[in-house]
Length: 85
Image (cartoon, rainbow, N blue to C red; front, top):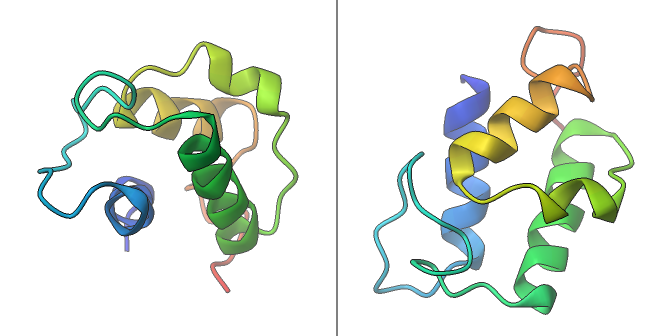
């Protein structure tokens, strides 16, 4: 499964059920995720990829695609370096 697909699945699990989640979805305005919802997604990503994410990194993340880019560039996820649990 591609990194983007894993992230989409995790975000969908924590987004309001009526919302459609795509890579272009804005986490705050479209999905209405508050700080608790964001923390839940960060925890799920940490569990999925076996990493520790600095919460400050998420201040720049606006969309699901931004999240994927951050995980690839800073945490080296998606290139086969981290196995999903």
